[in-house]
Length: 384
Ligand SMILES: C[S@@+](CC[C@H](N)C(=O)[O-])C[C@H]1O[C@@H](n2cnc3c(N)ncnc32)[C@H](O)[C@@H]1O
Ligand code: SF4
Image (cartoon, rainbow, N blue to C red; front, side, top):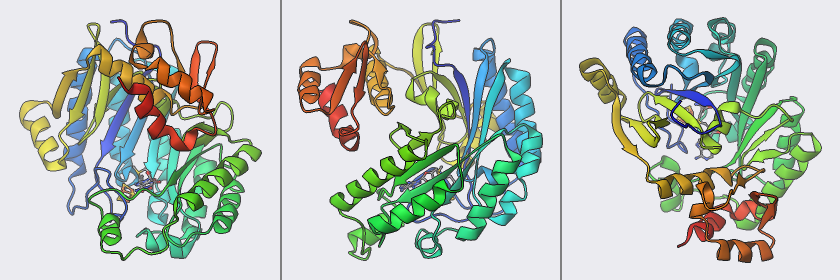
C-alpha cells in the first residue's frame, strides 16, 4: 500500500453541465444542448478502469458526484457509473456516496431513482429561502420548491445536506438571522453556509466593476452575519467543523474530510482534481477543463488528464497546512516532519499571542476569533 496518508480513499466525479449558468458561479460548469449521456457513461467507465488499474487494491470509502449539476444526469447514468465503481474497487462497509442536486421539481422527482442507483447522501443547493434573493442569484427554482426538495431528500436518503449563500445584495443581518433560523427549522444534520464571493470573470464581477451591484454588505456587516451564523448553528447543535460547513456530531461529510485531511482521492471528469500517493510520491492530477476536449481525449487516448505532477515535499506540507487549518480541529504537527516543516513557528507564536491560533497537545488550530482571518493567518504561517 505505498505509504498513502491515513485519511481514507475517495473518488470525485465531475459532471460539467447545468441548465443555466448562475451569474456568481465560477465552477467548471457549462450550458449545452444535446448531451449524449451514453457517451459520457462510456468515458467515465473508461476513466474508472484506468484509475483502478493504479489504485484498485485500495478500499474506497467515499464517492462524490459533483458539478455542475449532477441532478441533470439520467438515473441510468448514475447507476451505470456506480456499478463500474463497485466493480473497480473494494468498498468500505458503509461507503458515503453523495450527489449534488439542484432543487427544481424536475430534479427532485429523480431522487428515488438516484437512491436505488446507490446514492446515500445528497447535497441540495438551496442557496436562499427568499424568492427575491433567488431571482437576484439567477436561480431556476423558488424558495418553496427548495423547501419541498429538501423535505423529500430527507425522506429518501439516509443523509441530506443543503447549501446557502449569505452576505448577499441588500441582505441585512436581521434578515440573515431570520433566514438561517428558518433553514435550521428544516432540521438538517449538515449544512454548508458560504458568504457570497465575487469571483473574477463572472457576470457579478462585471457588475461590481461597472458600479451596478448595489447593496453588497461591507466587511463589518459580513462579519456580523458570520457571528450570527456561528451563534445560531452552535445553539442548534451544528457547530462549524470547517470554515463553511456545519454538522451534528458524526454527520461531517466524510468525502470532504479526505480533502481537508489531505488523504488520497481519484478525480475523474472535466477539470477534476485528484491526489494520489503512488510509489511513495504524492501526485496531483487534473482533467482537461473543457468538457468536449476531455471527452475527446478519453475516447481517443484513453486518458482525460491534462496534468499529472509529483508534489515536492514542501508543497505537500504546505497543502496540509492550507487545507487542515480550515478544520475546527486543525492539524497534527508532529516534530520536524509533515506540515510542521512548512510552518514558520516564530509567526505561529506571534499569532498565538494575538489569540488567533492555539496549540493543544500536538495540534495547531485557528481560534474562533481567528477564523474570519484564516487566509491572512495561513499566509503568515507559510511565510519563509
Ligand atoms: C458546485 S456548486 C453548486 C452545486 C449545484 N449546482 C447548485 O448550484 O446548487 C457548490 C456550492 O458552491 C456555492 N457557491 C458557488 N459559487 C459561489 C460564490 N460565488 N459565492 C459563494 N458560494 C458559492 C453554492 O452554495 C453551491 O451550492
Ligand atoms: S451554482 Fe450550480 S447551477 Fe449555478 S452555474 Fe454553478 S454549478 Fe451550475
